[in-house]
Image (tube, rainbow, N blue to C red; front, side, top):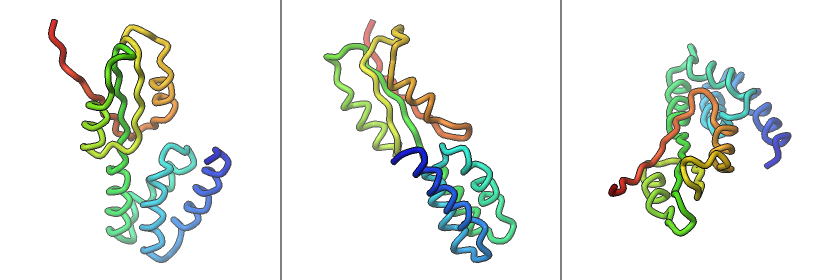
Length: 134
């Protein structure tokens, strides 16, 4: 989905968030959580989390935001397998994962860069660590 389309969806959901109907506002909160990385969604999400009119709206929006988990993983060489990290991060419910196959000292890590571009204040970032023998 293009950035323009994402902003259009967010604009529509922001309109729904202003509805007098609590069910509409709860639907908007659940849906806006999917687009939390879009800057325009932030104020509407905050208003829905702090909804003075109905605690159901607050609960539904907060639950959707808490379910949104992002993750990052890495292995040092191309021969190593990411499957263990992917399985572990999926098992804890991470919705968006970024993986690089590069040494940790390597600063050219495209997925790490994508992750930094993606995350926003308030996102939950989960990292995985696989122990090794020295």
